[in-house]
Image (tube, rainbow, N blue to C red):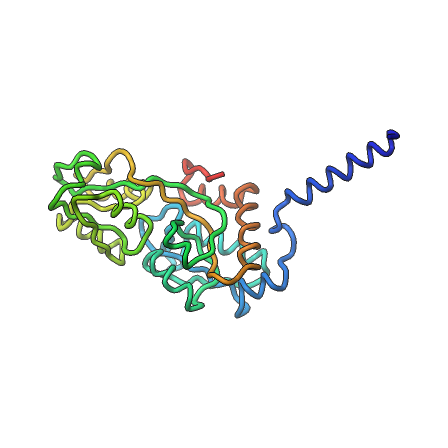
Length: 269
């Protein structure tokens, strides 16, 4: 092989590697992807609302506008698609999941589990967070094992991966589901429940708001949040996968996490 042929082969190999490794999100969306992600000409992003924030929850800012990591990711996805974005607000991820078949939204960012995967098509995971308990002020409970005993009143957000994880880990007590986080917080403050199962990154700031409450050590599961679309939209899923894959590496996701006070939150590879 001549030097010229060798250089040509190296160049072609490099070009091929570049083409297969650059995420599809850097290219223009196909008509099929745009039609499936924005069937009404607008990208409808489903978000779950909670004042606790975090890498999954969104909240409302002082001007009344939704803000949060899913909001930022939805805005960037809409920009790359070249379509306007609407945010469809829900009280929790369970409601988002149940609304998928109705066509009420086009893309979301929610925790993954096997039950939810029967209703949603998931792309890459971008955050993994420990789920544990916060206990009411004055509670004698010291560990997660102490939670698992008869008579302990445990609450979680209804129909969520965290609630299902707590139910699997607790053999001697039951978990009661509530639709709204603020409802559970009020019950915890008043002592009407003993423990609240949620993600640690949300419970730690909550504990600062409730003197005497404590976040328990350890975790009963690791909750993994990912991009998702309704079932039956293969082109939308392919573009969503490419988009989030790139967002995890080009600084889009890191910038959003940092902007919302989550500088110590790692991005899941």
